[in-house]
Length: 79
Image (cartoon, rainbow, N blue to C red):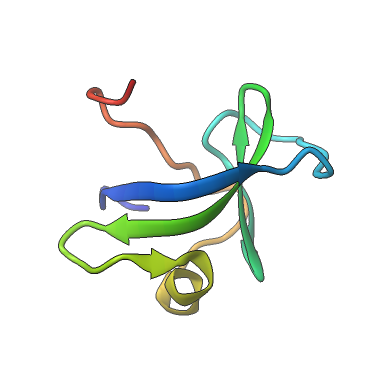
């Protein structure tokens, strides 16, 4: 989100979610944190915002200003 780094600690495939978005696009940011991938949807369960402590997706979404259609991008060092 807007140049801030996030490290995903736990995530799970969400095969029940129909994907109509590009890779990295936020599909849902209320209740569940769903992101489009090249192979479907991924539910982010736990993450670490840069300089912060680990948060559940639910905790993170309470304070984040994210909405469907925004995009997450991967860092160049991601494997």
